[in-house]
Amino acid sequence: MTNPDALFNLPEDASGPAEDSAALSVLASDPLSLMAPDWAAALQPVEGQLRRMGRFLIQEHDDGRGFLPRAQHVLRTFQRPLAGVKVLIVGQDPYPTPGHSVGLAFCTDHRTRPLPRSLANIYKELQSDQGIPRALHGDLSPWADNGVMLLNRVLTVTPGVTGSHRRKGWEVITDAAIGALVARHSPLVAVLWGKDALKLEPLLGGTPLVISAHPSPLSAARGFFGSRPFSRTNELLRAQGAEPIDWSLPPL
Image 1: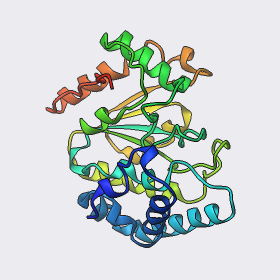
Image 2: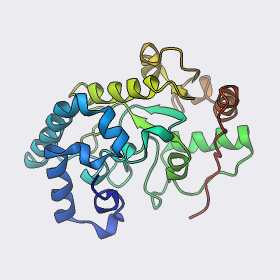
Image 3: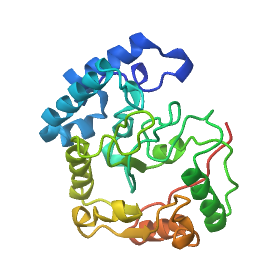
């Protein structure tokens, strides 16, 4: 596996055109090398589709449309081992605002201000559910480090155009990833926020589910607030004999 720090963990102000170009080239030529080894093995059947998506992103770049997140972050959710995933939280697609999306669903760069409203609502519910003070930053990577996979159904977007890369081919890859999680027959809880995420239920087999409205300001008051997704998830993990998630987010 290529050292993930080489492509994924560069600070935004320390990476530039050369790093973006290198990452984009690898996305099109050897995308599995950007993943943890067990994810690379699990997604080998869709390697051809991954390469096609890399070529699609090169074309988007060459045509001047660009894409988000930056190339070195596109496959970031697969950097941590498949074997360590206990919770799957499904998002729709990356934030379309430049500088916000960093390759993990709902997560932002730690310097992003103000926080996206969906994320602010997640923090509001986290405080209500778990008593955890609302973080002032949008970096959810500690959740990912603790076994929470933050997976967008579609991994890229045109800047400023929500949903622009839906049905371009990412769904083949993310559906395969969900299938790989289920096939392990290990403790797993899937958190499905909103109608789009709920469409994935057939892929999840008998996986315990936490279902509610989406945290978007358009729907949060209609079933997200008060749904206690964090405590419910931990209850379902304990029922499977797994350790609960520490949902706290340290200050940066």
